[in-house]
Image 1: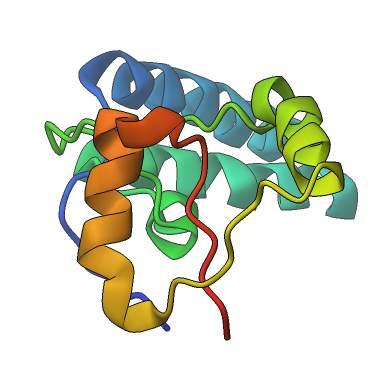
Image 2: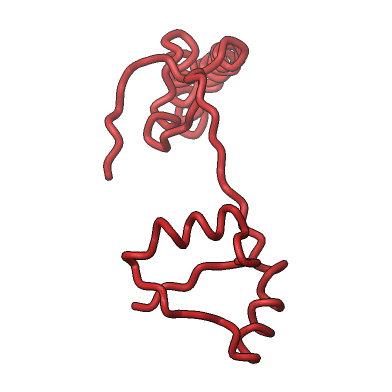
Length: 126
């Protein structure tokens, strides 16, 4: 899914100041030396001045960097390596019950959440 590019500020104040300072140095250096390679550095410097003045970094916008948005990103952890040996043992002993269908999903989730009947994992038959 393509992300919409906006011109809203997406850099912090310190980063903006640093961009303007580095950009100014690059532009000044490029104008003093006047070679094609140095002029390319001047173009990069001009972009850094724009980035610092506007607070918008098009690269951050294109990559979807989450800055100054007040977001908290949380992920769940699964303990697969902890439970896999026990699950293999239960499977080899024929104790694994795979008779649940997708219609039993809410009940299976509840069993897993509350570890009812020693439930380690809910297996649904296709």
